[in-house]
Length: 168
Ligand code: ZN
Image 1: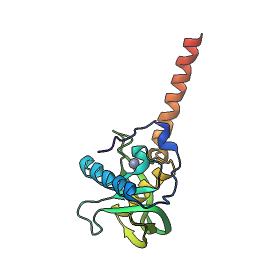
Image 2: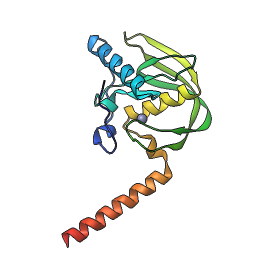
Image 3: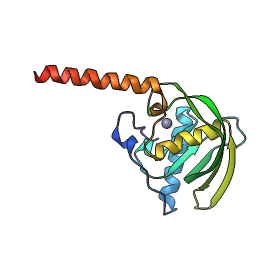
C-alpha cells in the first residue's frame, strides 16, 4: 500500500521523468499502484501521487472491456469527441467537479516489460487516462475548475490579509 500525497503538496506540481529502466523495481511499483488503486476504489492512480516522479500510471474502470492497465511513458496520438465528465481525485479529497475532455483517445505507451503498444480508448477509461497523464505534468483536475480557482484566490487573499494584520 502506498501513501497518497494530497493537495497542496508541491510534489504534485512536479513534472515526472520518463522511465528508462524496466526492472523488478518498476514491477514492484506497478504492483503497489494496482494494489493501492483497488483498495481506494478509484479508477486511476499515477506514480507521482505516491511521491515517485516517474511516468507510470494505472487505470482500472471496473466492468469495462480493458480491465486493469498500466501505461508507462504514455503519449496521446489523437483525441476526439469532447465531453463533460464528473471527476474526483485521491490527492484532492472531498472535491468533485465537471471537467471537459476528449472522451476518445489514441494512446501510445509502454507496458511493464518496456514493450511499446498503441490502443484506442473511449469513455471513462480514456478520461481516467488523461486525468492520470495530467498528474505526470504536475496538473490537477481542480486547475480546470473555474469555481475552484476563484476559491483559491479568495483563500490566498484572506491569508494575505491575516498575515498583514499579524505583521501590523
Ligand atoms: Zn488524480
